[in-house]
Length: 432
Image (cartoon, rainbow, N blue to C red; front, side, top):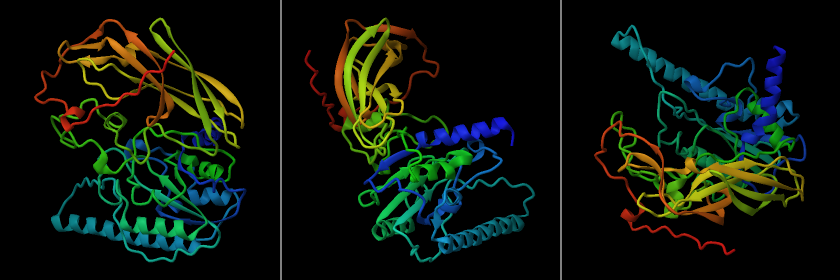
């Protein structure tokens, strides 16, 4: 391995924990040091390091979650379960490969392009979940990438019944249980979030995935990432629009995409956009709102109020005026991450955005505009945990950029919350 490759690998291992998102915690983790771990789940030995197609990379080496824990000094007490699962998985794969080859032979095909999609076929196995120790880790894996959309089927967006049973069984059996999500996208965790006390979004972190996870589990590093999507059951997402159509998809949901929909209609997700906990806690206090030319700047004081070191990501959202154009409750305008803060330590962050970046498209005038009115500023650490810290007033509507209707006039009308009898409730402005 070349020196620069080793340097890149070391940098990746150092930065990877900052990509992990701690979704739930009861204080059971991190562990005090290497100890016996009962390891389960499809991703324990068959950890996914990247997506399919161009979403993956070729690496000189790759360490799975199982290998990472062993390298860190932990004893895996469930080798029999992992061996049994691997054998059942290999048997199912051989059967699936044979079915494809048999079909090719029957139909006399000479050239075949076979799309496998993003859902691993289910297979039967019956293995005791009785590994020794007080700590258990279950690694839930999903593949995703180019060539296939995500599916709502069990084994993709939804949990399989077997996965639900295994997760809940382990959560009740072990004193310290951690559900690890080795996924690149959202999974509906609603069947288990009510009971499971510790959930970590590991993601797919390339060649150092297993090493970086071991660092976080043992407290050598800490997770400080935030969600870039809203996690919720499928039926709770906005159902407007023509999803999955090959041609002429009509985006009837308008501006109400992702967190903009959930925040605007007041629907509580499992885990909101921008959310991420950690091994410590923080307080965020807005200090000043000012204009510098075309830039709006908000300063915030962030204090580590917990007992361990950590980092926090502060987020600034803008609520636009209710003018001619339809607007969501709020939109992310800026964010910033603190340096590492020791317990009791405070850092001051300045979050800034150019006013032209929050302009909206006016289809009647074919232009990007800033409508006159009050622009509310919200500060927090997720889209569902913000506080109003100030406002900016624009006395007249400003055209930011003239554009053109390249695709012609649409043949549909955007959905609005009022169509479903929903009224946005805005908090009062702060005094002073």
